[in-house]
Length: 423
Ligand code: PLP
Image (tube, rainbow, N blue to C red; front, side, top):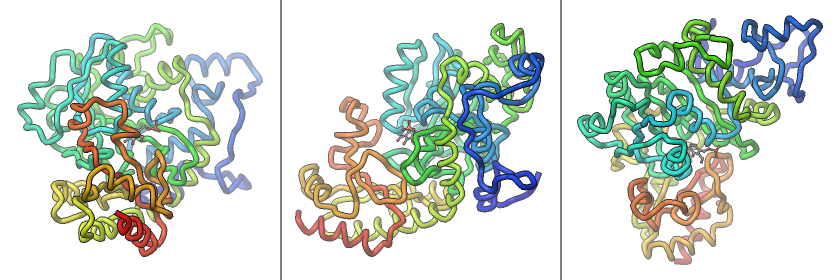
C-alpha cells in the first residue's frame, strides 16, 4: 500500500494497467463473463472467490471506480450505485429494517428529506429530524432503542450548514450507532469525514466527482472497524440464509457492511452503477483536486462580490468571515466548495428577474459541474416540501442557489452585475 497524497490518488488510483495494457481504464460493456468450468462460477456465486459473473453485481470498470473512491475517502471498500438517491437509501436499508428508526440532521437535500419522510416511512423505517445545531442532549433524546444510525450531510444542500462531524460521531458511538454522512458537496478533496469519526460516507457522484454533468451515479464507502457485533445489527453477524449461512462479519471481516450491501441490496434491487457512467466519473475524479480548488476560489470571490452589492439582501457562503458556519468550515473543510446562496432585495420576484436575465449562468436543476448555474430551490428541488419542511431545511422563498463553475471569475461577476442592474 502506498502513501500517496490525495491529488496523486485522484489521478492514479483505481486502475493499474498491466504490461502492454490500456493506459486508461477500459470500459467493460458486457453483462456477462465467460468461464471454462462450472465450479469457478459456483464459487463466485457462493462468494468464495473474487471475480465477475454478472454486471448487476459487479463489473471490472465499476470495480476500478469503486477502488478509486474508496482510496480517495480512505475507506476499506466502496459500492457504486445507480444514483446518489439510491446510495442514501441503501446506506440505511443495509442496517435498518421495518420497525427501525434513524436520527437525521434536518439540513438535507430536498430529495433526501422526501425519501426519508415519505418513501422510507412506507417501508416502516421512521426518521426523527433534529437541527444540526441542536444540543447534544436534544440529539441524544431523539435516539431510541430501535435507532440504527445517525445521518447528516457534511455541507448541506442548499442550507450550507457544516456538520460538526466529531460531535455527531461521538454521540453515535456512545449509543453503538454508525454515523453516516453524505459528503457530496465537499468531496473527499475538501473533507475526509472518516478522519473525524464518520463510519459510512455516501455521495451523489453525479455532482463534483463527475464534475461535468454527464453521469448520474452514487457510491457508499465503508471506513472499516465499526463494531457491527454490538447487538444492534444481527443481520451483519448472524447467518444469511440467502447465502448458505454466510456471516458477513466473519466471511468479510474487513468490510462486512459493503459485502452485505452488494450481496443483498445491489443483487436484489438491481441498482448498480453502469460501466460507462463509472468510466466518465473516473475521468472526472482525475481532475477533482484542480476543479475543487477553482470552484472554491471562484465561489469565495462571487460571495464577496454579492455581499458588497447594493441590490443583494443577504449572502450565505461558509467562506465568508461573517457566516455562521465559518468556524466549523475552518475546522472541517479545506475549501468551501462551489455552492453559495443569496437573496435579492425585493424578494422572490426580484430574484426571478435576476435569474431570468443571467446569460452565462444557466437555470439548471443541477449543481457541481464546471459550468456556473442557478436554481430556485423553493420552486424546484425542494418543491415537494411543506412550508415547515422548507423552514427546517433552511430554504427561504427568496433563496437563489448558485453553483459557481470554473470559468473566469471576472466573466461570472459581470454576468451577475448586468442581471442585478435590471432589478
Ligand atoms: N445528496 C445530495 C447532497 C444531493 O445534492 C443530491 C442531489 O442533488 C443527492 C444526494 C441525490 O443524488 P442523485 O441526484 O445523484 O440521485
